[in-house]
Image (tube, rainbow, N blue to C red; front, side, top):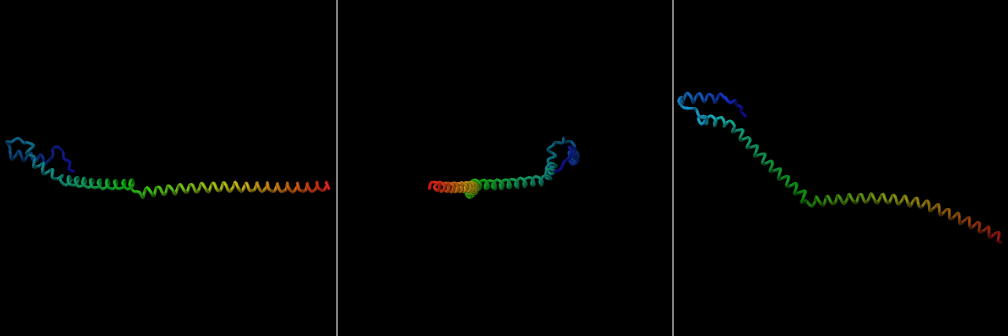
Length: 145
């Protein structure tokens, strides 16, 4: 971009030229239109570049909007995604249920092993009690006879 001071040398030269060529005429802004047109042409390249960039940006925005719409539709409407999520959820639930069952089996096994020891001891105590009663009975029979 070009920055110029208000008292631009080119503008002053054009004013001096107009005074020389038309000494009796008042200088009007209209008389500078050719100079302004020539000066404004310097910015044509910049204006074209801005237009090109605006067009490219609009195309990029359109591509982005299309890609986003396709992504949203795929997430919303894709049955395979929902089915996959449901299958994964079912697998996860089954895994936790399996771990729960294994933990319950371990607890049950420990309980029955402990119970078996207690019952075994009780059975042995009962056998010993019966044996002692039989011995006492034999002794009592011996006395009776």
